[in-house]
Image (cartoon, rainbow, N blue to C red; front, side, top):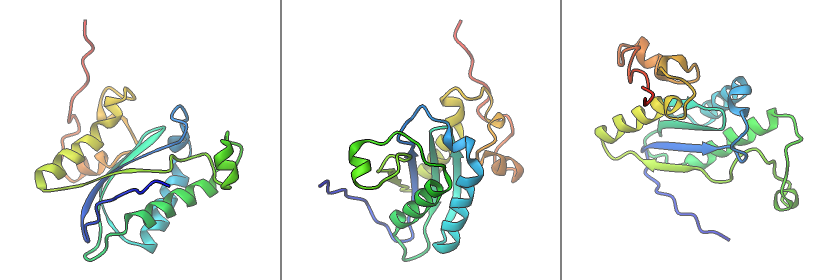
Length: 171
């Protein structure tokens, strides 16, 4: 049995990457409203300050800050992933191991988190989140991706609408 070690910082700020099990699926954008509802319910049960996010077809990135004295990211992610999974029709391919454990085959079991160390690291994490749709070739201009907190940053005057410009294709 693996012994996963996570850095637990009460009231800490974290950057996360969470993947679908089958990376070729587009479930997260296809069922965006179900995913958004999962976050809303998890947030109501265990609040956190959402600093930046992006939903891509097969993975997502979030940056959030926990309340003072709270270091429990795992329960939040378990609630989000399980609620979303319950909202999705069954029928995905299941390995024997997942069948034996009565698990769904939607999410990778683990998620990746990084503790945000300081304000410069926070800025770089938020930039990484916002540029991700362009990095993966989903859009040429960040403003063209609808499933992102980038639009909130533009509306608040924190980023220009043409932030990061367009990817120039090599000749």
